[in-house]
Structures are given as structure tokens and as C-alpha cells.
Image 1 (tube, one colour):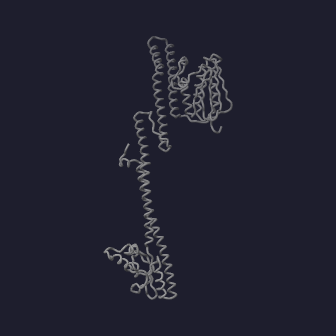
Image 2 (image 1 turned 60 degrees about the vertical axis):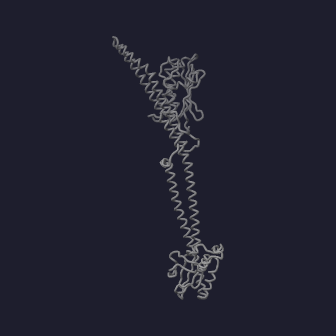
Image 3 (image 1 turned 120 degrees about the vertical axis):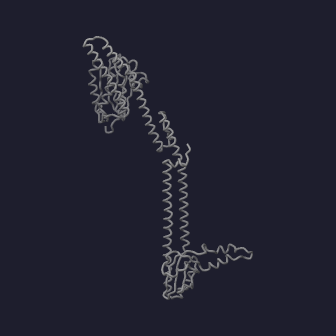
Amino acid sequence: MALSVPAIMKTTAARLSALYLLLFALCAVLLVFYMTSLSARMLTAQTQETINDEVLGLARAYQRGGLPILVRVVEQRSRQPGANLYLIADTNGQILTGNVQSLEPGVLETEGWTSSPFSYQRFGEGELERQRNLPNDQGTAQPDQSEALAVPGEKGHNAIALVLRLPNQMIMLVGRDLGEPERFRAVIRRALMLALGMMGLGGLLIWFFVGRAALKRIDSVSEASRRIMGGDLSGRLPVTGAGDEFDRLSENLNTMLARIATLNEGLKQVSDNIAHDLKTPLTRLRNRAEATLSGTHKAADYRQALEATIVESDQLIRTFNAILMISRLEAGYSSENTIRVDLAAAVRDVVELYEPVAEEGGVSLEAEVDGAFIVVGNRELIGQALSNIVDNAIKYSTDSTSAPTVRVTLERTGGEIRLSVHDNGQGIPDDTDRARVTERFVRLEKSRSQPGSGLGLSLAKAVMTFHNGRLDLLPGNPGLSVVMSFPAREDH
């Protein structure tokens, strides 16, 4: 989706990029001024040191032979290539010798270092200027020879100097041209400005390409979010596979959406199951009450009807409590705390509780538990899940053609502790049926004759999910093996 410049500047990415670019430009400009100023100060200090050395040399010459030697040395040094500025003037400022033809007015009036750079003209530059401006025999300007002899800035150079008064009140000036420091400073400034321009251009290009790619990613995420908010919960945010923060965000949100879809599906199933499976017991309650009130009965009949109603109501309450418990566990919430639980002790308690039930049904209930098996969990939830599984195993092992047996075992396999309940009944041979029986209110056709609500294995599965484990239903050949796999503690 194309965006205009004002729309782009409203995005956080564009604003951050513009802010960083502005901050970078400000720092770069400050760096340019700092570097040029620093280089100018360094060159000025070096120039002053050079002038001081020259003055010391001239002072020694003056001490050796007075003014004649000083004049001779000044003349020699002023003729050397790249010479400093040398000037000796009388008390009135009239130039007597040196390589300076003219000075800015007022320079020789103050003794010491000049307060600021001054303009000057070297000896002979005025004559070169006049020769260059004279026409030649063809009426044109002089050829490039005179221009080659011209010094840059022949209209006047800038320099700093040290002005001294000799004992005879004559004036001596020793200075140095600032053309080289100024050229060096200009080169530094141009280099830094060029670097600034290149970095700014690079920043704009990076923002244009990388920023546009990021904006396109954000647009695609926004478009997918709009579809999801429109009711398409099967939609997912795009993942490019780059592994960047956008992909990590999309993956986390997709996981969250999948979790929400699962919870919504569970809620829909609960609603459908309540509407279908609880309608029968509620209808039975109403019919019983209506039948009791429709005729004349003895007090014992009314009492019996009320007791049956209470039993039916208790079963409904237990069913609703189981549904609420499953919903809380599947949502990852439980009001109970998790502690260290010994599964061996929990197995012994459940086996001891169901031994009378098994004995009454002619079922042999066995437990193979050696040692302690410690997990972190909720003892009550684990006990309830194990009780549901053992109860189912006892009920459905009575159909066994051989001696009905239910065996509970505990073993450590790799990083898991496996609690298995095995019976030798008819089992569930179909893989599809084994996957379905852990859903709410699902009861296979052959189990309809047994009492129950179809929530036992659903609750066990929710308990294992809450404990970061899993519930597996495996064929027992014969019978069925229900395995509760817990993550083992590392210290055991």
C-alpha cells in the first residue's frame, strides 16, 4: 500500500529515522567546526613557535654585529623559497628592507603579537599585477606566463606577525603567511562536509530501502490483524523466515491466536455438550417431579422421589464442577498451588481407595511402585485424574474374557516419569476413537451401558496439560493402557 510523505512521517519508524538523522547531522556539523577550529589553533600555535625561533635567531645576529648584520641576515632569509615575512622599518614606519611591500595600516604601531590576522602584499607582487594587466602587441592580455608567476591572493595575503622595537627605535617585523593554515582548514572542512553529505545520503538510502521494507511488513501485519478482528480467527500474521523481531512478534501472536482459537472451540464444544448431554438429566428431573405431583402418593414415595432428585442433582453439580475445572486447567489457571508431589504415594492412596470397588466387581487391582518419584504439581488434581482413570479401568475390565486385572505402574524413562494404568478389557482398538474419548462428553457406543458423564478422561487430559505433561491412550493387546507422562525433576 503506497503512502504519501505526510502519511509516512506520521509513522513511528519515520519519526525515529528523522530524529536520528537530525541528531547525526547536528553532531557531524559540530564535529566539522570543532575539527577545523582545532586544526587552525594547532597551525597557529605552530606558526607562532616558528616565528619565535626566527626572532631568537635574528636577535643573536643583532647582538653579534648590530644593525648591519641584522639587515644582511634579513635580506638573505627573505630571498629564500617559502620564506617567512621579514621587514625592517624606520621610526616612522617607512619600510627599509625585507620581502614585504605594503602592510595594512596600523600594524607597525603596536609592539608584540598582532591582535588579529592582517593583510599585506609581498615585494614585487604589485609589479606583476601591472604587467599582467598591460596589453601585448596583439592587443590581448599577457600569456599564461605572468599568471603562472602570480601568487594566489595577490590582492593581499593574510598573516600574523611579531612586531619588535630595536634599541635604536627602528621597527622589525617577523611574520608568517596564513595561506597554508587556511588552505589546510578549508581542506579539512571540505573533507568533513563531503563525509557528512555521503553519510547523510547513505542514511537516507538506508531509511528509504530498509524503512520501506519495515513499513511494508507493518502494513501486512495490520492487514492480517484487520482480517482477524473481522472474525477470521483462522488467519495468521505473516512470517517471512528472516528471524527478526517482526517474525518473533508474529510467531508469538500466532501462538496466542492458536490458543484463543482452541479456547473458543472448547467453549463452543462445552456449550454444545451442555445443550445436548445435560438436557436428558434435567428432563428426567422434571418428569420425576411432575410424576410425583400428578397423583396421590404416600409420604415414603415423596421421600424416595426427593432422594432420587437429590442424587440426580448431585451428579449434575459434579458434572458442572468437572466442566469448570477442565476449562480452568485448559486456560492455564488453577487456584491451587503446586508443590513437590511423590507420585508413588499418590498411587498407593488411589489404589487403597479403589481396592474395595475392584474387589466388589471381581477385578484384581495391582500396583508396581518401587522408590519415590517426585514431580512438581498439585496433589489433589493428580489424584483426581488418576482416580478417574483407575475407575474407568475397573469398569471396563469387567468385560474381559480372562481374569479382570488392572495394573498401575511407575517408571522413569529418559526425562519423563510415566504413570501407566493398564487393564485387560476390550480396550479401544480404533485410533480415531482413542483420540476422541479425551474430548468432553464423548462416550463410545459400547460404554453407554456404564454410568458416567464422559468427562473423566477430559479432566485427566486437562490435568496433564496443566502439569506440562501429556496423556496417551495406547492399545494394551488386550485392553487399554492410559499413560500419564510427567516431566522429571532434574535433581532426581
